[in-house]
Length: 150
Image (cartoon, rainbow, N blue to C red; front, side, top):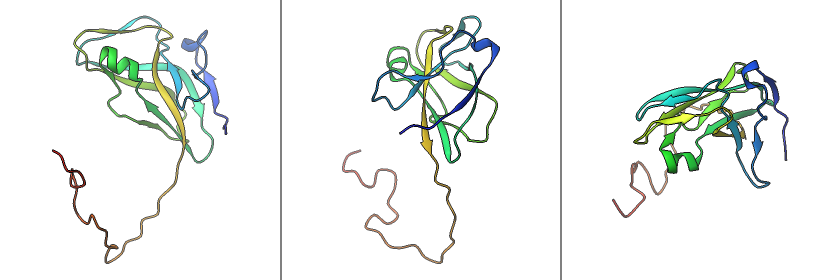
């Protein structure tokens, strides 16, 4: 199944490929850094990395922006608001908040695969206020109440 995402490429993304799937079974599309010069993020620092893309999502969808596991493992690179949500009515540039949780400075280079994006359907909720909730076996147990270990 596929859905079309309309895209406008901004000048600083010229020459970079559009997001794509690395393999046939991949859930996420790679988002590329459209930086015009190397961007150094110090340990503990964060930066807003541009993609150079503006999009229009299909109705009833969001774009979830998620970290790349290789960058997390090798360099401690995280996305602090994971998953980031791009709403269907947002029309600004896609940008990725990147946090360096590693012990060394990290350099974002032009065209680097900085994050991944997953197109997901959105179900809108309607709140229904009631006097009582249905009983469950779990009840009010939370924060580790379903596990046996610490």
